Image 1 (cartoon, rainbow, N blue to C red):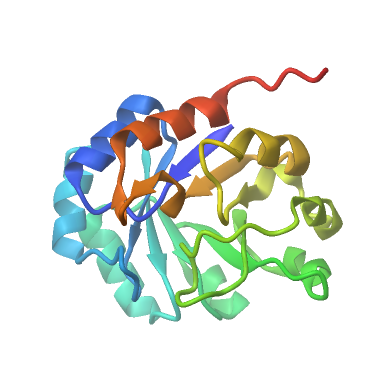
Image 2: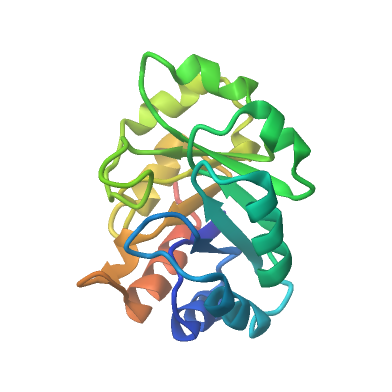
Length: 204
């Protein structure tokens, strides 16, 4: 199970994610309470080995700005979290994660988008992501997307991640608010979440 810890703003949180076995860390460059400036992200990224993939999260950003930030920070993956057209995704020389809020009425259309991973998220709230809201995980099987390309997000926490994985059977999980206390990344929760997500689920 691959794990992405998103909304990283401190080196301390990034190092905890690394130590606990995270596969991806996410820097948010869009409007969010977890927004980070590229220089700070560059400094954190420089302290991390290539074994952990650095993801930049963007919402309706220009291709030029995304590429400039990706180059500066040393990103491995670009996450599109807005209304970006398929043509833009195809033009990016990086792995692409495309986020979709899961709605029953539009779930069948998601799989046509050209990307490396589909991040299936809860409903849109004040921001495009990181709102801490779950959705019906049973809907994931209706997407007809290869499960190896699905990253599950939206309201996950150390308490529910095992149940989410057992239901949706994704390739990976993504968490932000679920590993925070009072709006800040909680190092113990990061460790608990990754431990739970990577634990083998014993089917009874």
